[in-house]
Length: 481
Ligand code: FAD
Image (cartoon, rainbow, N blue to C red):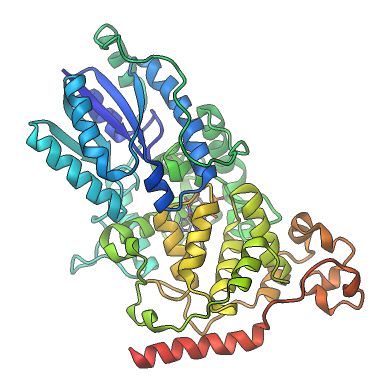
C-alpha cells in the first residue's frame, strides 16, 4: 500500500502540512502534480507563472527524491478529468490514502469535492489540510460567527489567534527518519528521472526569479534582517527596493506564509506587539492582508465568479473603449507613472504594490472601465497572480469590495506620481522616450514646451473630467439599487 501526496499550490518539501500528514501515515509515499493547461487558460494564469511552476517542480522533484518520494507529473486538460485520473493512479500503484492542502477558489473546491466522492466510492481515505494561510479560513470570525468585512478588526482577531496557537513551520528532522524507513519500499518502476515533459502551455520566461530552496530562503532572511525594519518608510516608493518581492513564491507555495512570519519574528520580535506600528509590524500586516483576502474568497463564493462584493456596483454603467484599454495595457496612456507601471508588468510579470493601486484606479476611475477587464489582464501578466489577492486588490481599487476605497476618493495619477516617484527615477527607467523631459515636467510631460519633440502620447483622458463622471456613475448605481 502507498499514500499519495497531491501537490497543488504548495510546491515545497519544507513546512508542507500535506506532506507531513502523508509521511505520518507510515506508508511509503508517492507524490503527484497534475498540470491542467485548459483550466489555467480559463483562469488566465500567466505564462510566466506556469514557467515558474515548471522550474520549481524540478527542484521539488529533487527534494522529494532525496527523501525517497518519487514525484510524477501528469496532465489533465481541466479539472473535470482529475477525479478519474486520481482513481486510475490509486489502482495502478495500490494507493489507499490521498493527502493534499486545501485551495480556496470555487472551482478548486468543486474539483476537490468530486475527487473526495470518487475516493470514498473506491474505499480510499482522503485528507485535505489547511496550509495556504497561517490561520485557517473560517477560524477568524466575529462574535456572530461571521467573516469580518473590514480589515482592521480582522487583523486584531487574527493576531489574537496567531499568538494563542503558536503557528510554527515544521522542520525537516522527521523526514530524514522517514526517508530511511521507506528506502526499500518505493516502487522502483516509477520514473526517478529529475526531468518531466514540459507543460503544454504558452510560457514566458520566469528566470528573474530563482527557484532553488536556498535562494528563496535567503531572500526571506535577507529581507527580515535588513529591510523589514525600514519597510514602513520605503514600501511605497517603486524606485526603492524596499519590499520583499516574495509574492511569486507565496503564490505557488514555494514558500509558506508560516515560514515568512517565523523568520520575521526571529529577527524582529517586536513585530507582534499589537499597534506597535514598526516597520516589521507593517510587513506582518501585509501578510495578514493575504490571509484576509483568502479567508474572504473561501467565505464568499461569488468572488470566484466575477461578481462584486458590493452588489449595488452591478449597476455601474462602464464605458467600453477598446482603444483606451489597449493604451493602458501597452503603457501608452500619456500618464507616465501608469505607463511605467504597465511596462514593468509586461516586461517582468511583476509590479510594485503602489503602482498596482495607481494603475488599477486609473483603469476603473479615469477610464471608467469595468474592473474585471483589468483583473483579467493582471492575472494574464502577473508572475504572482493569485485569485484572492488579485480580486481583492481590484475590488479595493474599484470600490466594489469589502474594505474598499470609498468611490468618491479617487487617486490623482499625477499627484500620486509626484509623491511616490518624486524625481521620476522609476518613470525614466521604463519610459526611455522621456529621457530629455526636465524633472519638473516628468509627471505631466505634455505641459512641457518641448513636448512636440518627444515620441510619447498625449493623455488619453482628462483626469478632472473623468473623476466627476466616475463619481456620478457610482452615485447613480447606488440610486438604482
Ligand atoms: P511585500 O510588500 O513584501 O509583502 C509581503 C507579502 O504580503 C506579499 O508577498 C504578499 O503575499 C502579501 N501582500 C502584500 N500586500 C498585499 C495586499 N495588498 N493584498 C494581499 N496580499 C498582500 N498580490 C499577489 O500576491 N497576487 C496578486 O495577483 C495580486 N494582485 C494585486 C492586484 C491589485 C490591483 C493590487 C492593488 C494588489 C495586488 N496584490 C497581489 C497585492 C500586492 O500588490 C502584492 O502582494 C505585492 O506587491 C507583492 O510584492 P512583495 O512580495 O514585495 O510584497
